[in-house]
Length: 256
Image (cartoon, rainbow, N blue to C red):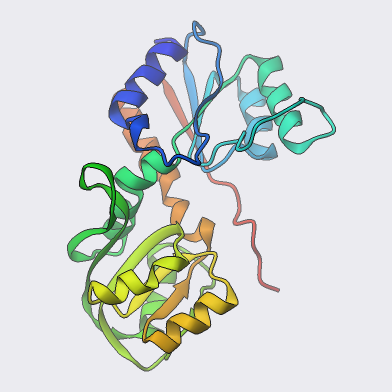
């Protein structure tokens, strides 16, 4: 299959109509007729991923986060994004990203499955009943402190940040991979007094606790890196003749 045929399948499986209006995902670098024998799956097309794509002779990179997020007025090797684009173009490597369409369709569901939530349902419903994040019941009641450890364990994280009360007992939680700090009022309305998300700012955290909702900040990377393994398996089933290479870059945040 060539790049055009593969992206047609991806658009059918993960329709682009579920993109948020502000998103700029989809095809970013395209060599339509290039035969695809090797596909890299990554969270984002950082320098390591683009270098590795060239090194191993990949034909296509499929990422969650788009490389080109805002309009480029010029492409320069002195610019971070421009340098990566030029590298891919020079090597004939295509790049396709599925961002908020994947968030709306699957990312919350994937996270809920990783956490083994039961009776889970869409948290913030959007088009056709799909939406970002899920709310559901934990496998067992636990303290917020225990829940922090549970989140670290199932998402393979070294640290999380907590805004809340460690000893409070909880059984129902909301999870919004990526950045979902603004949804804590919705979590409370759905009977969840803990929101697990990323990119939590000081004021949102303080206000949430005052409102009765603890927030566990697992980081943007922390909840979304599951995309690489899960999408790698899905692409392997869709494109049996292609070699699927999963690349998980290191968490860009390190607490010293």
